[in-house]
Length: 142
Image (cartoon, rainbow, N blue to C red; front, side, top):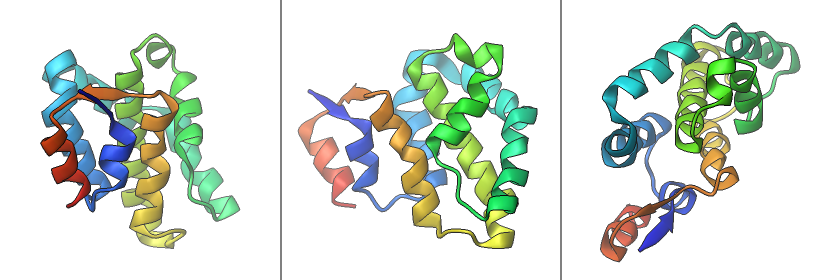
């Protein structure tokens, strides 16, 4: 059966980094492979548009959301032509990196707030995955 990944992760107690690891291991790598996820990480880490979110966030004293990161990534031609799953991964990585670089210093929001704002990308793109009902229920009860 198909289940929405937003519900799958939102109702879990996983941290943002744990969500990224789970998404890669259980969903993304099966469709796109490990080389693609490495490429996504490198594109995010080297994006000047994503880095610009840092200064904006500091000036405005806000936690960016998935739309901020998604807009920054889509200013890079490479991301514009990628699948929803790849764009979602990019947003999750960008949010995680922002949390490490900016939020751990300035404390604009809690880890749960950053996580919840980032995983909304799954809802925006309506990303569903096949899994058993027991797998889904096990995750949302964690």
